[in-house]
Length: 467
Image (cartoon, rainbow, N blue to C red; front, side, top):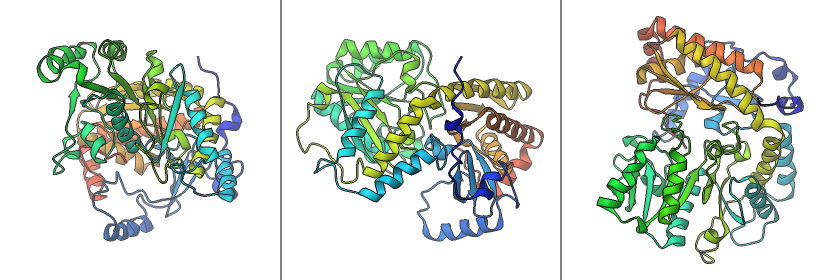
């Protein structure tokens, strides 16, 4: 059983300047949802921003504190989405804010790609020290998850001299050309963007039996094993539906990679930094990758990504082979160092404890609505609830929003719950109650809730899109 997280780590509001916000209950809705100012802003936004942005529902956030998000109308929501699993230490954690302020007062930017920025190396070391690999490691820092995937693709080909890469059906790795070519969670991410990056194949995901595809299909009929540079895999699929693999699948994939000299790249951009109740999801299966990718929660909302690799792999490429003007920005690095301290100080354990509580509550909701809820799955605070249709998943997401609970759908017909790792037992109980009410509402009047969601511009079957 996981130990309770220290109270200090669960109380990020202690240094907030607004006592009024600290004293408000969460959630606390003071207007209709969405409110009038939110509706007006949505109309303004639609005049000026790219229509490629999918927007899950009309939330207009202006302030965050702890587990709470306040919108433009003054409504306070309980955040079980965490900015797509990014705000790992909650909103406005005083240790993270203090680190950001201190660093911002010293230096905002100086490119670590060209000069020896001290905090860059310190952050590289800190991330390597929590990586799930043994031996000498080296770290590259960038700005985002998709950049880390692009970096891994380049490094794998450079280090091995091999041309081919393997992703997995259901996997999501980003939106830039290389990473979207590797992505296979939804066909719409590829629509009208061909030709995509060549030399990429997609394997079935999740079952030990699926591993036969490599020998029976890929190596036998398509490309020889000694020309495959790497497999790049989410240990638990994120945007593709919060899919947890069968025990033995990742272990078998590791053995296959060892047998053929193929690099094993763990994309832990969403599943890492404590979200599953361990620092990294691969640790649930005792698998050691050759490269590890992280972003999202590593800096509590500041833009930072990292690739950690075994030293012999990282040292294979030459000076100038890769770099980034902004990667490893000193302010983002400061946030990451504070975040890592908090993760090691109890938040990873808390994710496991609260995840056990959440699974019990979600399974009870599923038993009460067996026709609507088809599966509950996940580890720690990476939890997916699958519904009988995409429309019903979207409707539950919207019904939760109307009640002051922020959740986010994924996959074809799944709603994910990925709250900040600071969530307390009481906050989890509140979230489960509100989610249960949302599911019951959709079960009782499915057509009406679907219509309400559509009228609010919140019905987009097929899924929210990752950054």
